[in-house]
Amino acid sequence: MELRLRRDVKLLVLVVAFFSVIAGFLAGLAGNTQGWLGGVLYVVFVAGPLFVIGIALRSSSTGVERTIAVVALAFALYWFSVVSGNWQQYNYVERVLVPLMMSPAIVAYLAAFFVELPSFKPHIPSGNS
Image 1: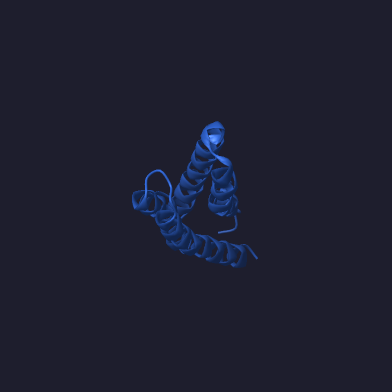
Image 2: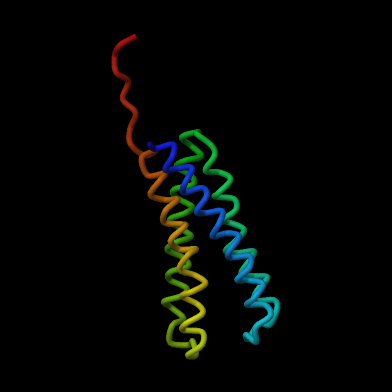
């Protein structure tokens, strides 16, 4: 069950990463304040880490699983704080588009965190040698 859940979360993260590339391309075409550079930066800083986490979810190493959990939680908290911290500065269009673009990424980061959370459980040998 746990292996299937990890596979499903990996697929979710990779799909959201692909969605983020498309969203970044569209944001670059739209008339935002940074122009096309805003779309490129979105792809680099949102889709890039999602692709790396999606590929890293294939690993069964405890160290990699723990690293994924910590990094995914850090990215989820960071992007949530960026969106909520800048909320007052957004115009009406941005108040619709930013949550549409960032919510899937934040959910994907949180899903990766929760699927790797059992790696922090201490492994106790059974004593049967």
